[in-house]
Picture 1 (cartoon, helix red, strand yellow):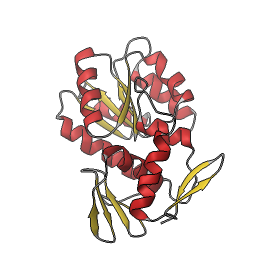
Picture 2 (tube, one colour; picture 1 turned 120 degrees about the vertical axis):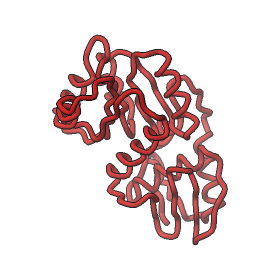
Picture 3 (tube, rainbow, N blue to C red; picture 1 turned 180 degrees about the vertical axis):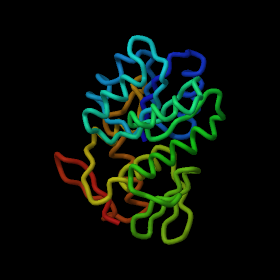
Picture 4 (tube, helix red, strand yellow; picture 1 turned 60 degrees about the horizontal axis):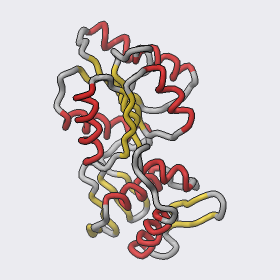
Length: 218
């Protein structure tokens, strides 16, 4: 899963980027409000963590413009302001959730998982496709009721495919969900992950449409 983090506090931004990466997210971090919408135009993200008090263009202005585009990208607002009026304004502008500083990073993780579940139309704590089940909160994978141990990147590929079950996902979209801007990607890395997953779940578990991408067939 790929997250865009917009936070101008250097210490907090670095800490959140590192913590989210340890949770298995690919994270791009920026500090200026005017850079966010252009970034969303050129890369696919699964959620936006957005500080309200950004320089150049406020987080609320960014959120308002984003929702005027009719996009359903999940957005979590971060802010040092904690009045009821501030929370109402943020939610009315289209935020999916609102977290006041200071906060516990584990609460951020839980709220992020919640808005990601809602965006995928999932009510429970797990993602299910046939006999495959993924628990995003601890990256556990089960197949036919039995645990399957997978490297973090392979779990991330599988999660994107499950969330898009029934649709082909492009190679570009899958690669973007795995790596942030400053990470290098090998030319055949994705193919290696797909090959390993097919060995785990069956050769026909993931379909390939040449020139288009991959689709989960479980």
